[in-house]
Length: 572
Image (cartoon, rainbow, N blue to C red; front, side, top):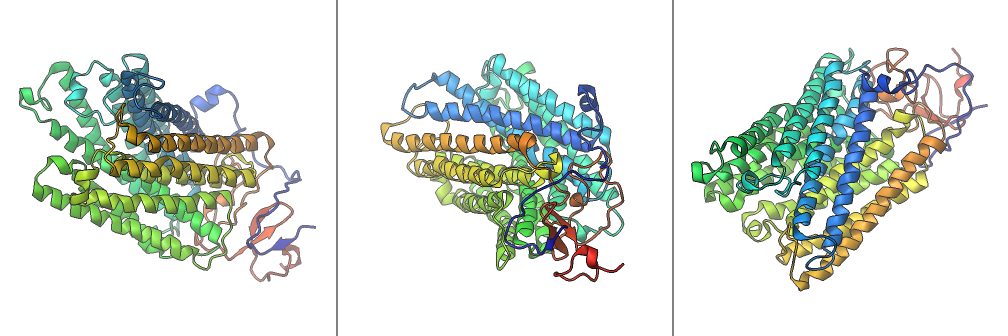
């Protein structure tokens, strides 16, 4: 006989006997063969294919990062020459930024989860969704092809005038990024249309899960900012091919104009990376604190505020090359964008306060995010202040700050969200102990790698340099050792997830006791997501669930049942 208990601190033991009722075929098994995947219009399959491509890109970029850190173990040549080093760190940055961080959460997790969260069968434009995937693949091919041609040594930002004169494969790489931009725009349009037109009756704007708010705000940035990047890169290609003189001072152009164009997109792109991560953290903090999210409306408004203010701060990347008045204005705007980010952190902490916290693997990554993102944000204040930025500009302090925000923020949230929705995506539970150990390894390795770089920056170590003075070697050695610890943590993380696919217990429909709609269908979901139309409820009402210890599933307590009653004891 099954028993039910209230969700407390203890994690359930997931024991899933074979069901006696026939379950609908999941999206994974409904059709078989490679063609059924390549031509699918199912948002879930598209999300999984995005996930495979994005993780492959992350592997490539990660290997390049380890090679760069190994080279910096000693002054002078260690394992490569200076030219190879320039190619390696450029491709690391370009692959990690354009192929991994920007599309990671919206394209992979967002594609899978968004229609499920609103109770829809798919996104608004399924064919556009598939087209966005193929555009991402084609863009990735062009970008990675630069490796096999003449390489790429401009830095991931393609700054002029060097990018217009170098013999490396700038046109191939920038064409790849141009195509990737269309993929991002298609995804943004699809998400906006889906949220506007496919929400079920009763799901008003302020009854949407916060992850949907973050995807919606991100989609606005994708649609409005990405065309600027596309135009800028087309101008760069035209400059190289035809010498039209947009950025070449010898022809009346201005190389700083390129920086303005590039960062007008790329600083909002920082929020394309971090806003979806913030949405995931809101879901995880509420779920594993077993309490309603604190300040729901402030979290909604702060997502939109970050999206809008992100368009106004691009000039802080050029403090050392713009007028004093412009620098003061952009400095003030830079400080203002920290306000909605601070609102989110304080609301998450308030949600944790007196919550019944369960240190599951997703929750460990959520807590790591808060620590690392807060540290990255606070160090950003030194770069936003004019007096200190003069000293810290273009040093390893900037490298560390960027990685604390992007990797300590986006990557931690991405992995946390992956562990959170993994049972829903693939119908398998993973080993909690090794999941938590992977988080510990990543957290320790990350700080071990990047905190010494703050110290290097304050001491004047310039970023991107192949050689350095002997007095910097000690901190470089520490940072390199930390990079390998970080790599071990990521390998453990991958092993835990892959192992679960083959040896993991079958996941119940709702292993976390969550009220959002994606947990009301089977794990993994059927092709059309739901057998019955789900009922719209408060997404953060976590009080109405009891744990069935036999199946490991959280079930809604029927009306009239007490915590001591079993569902079978309630009168009809």
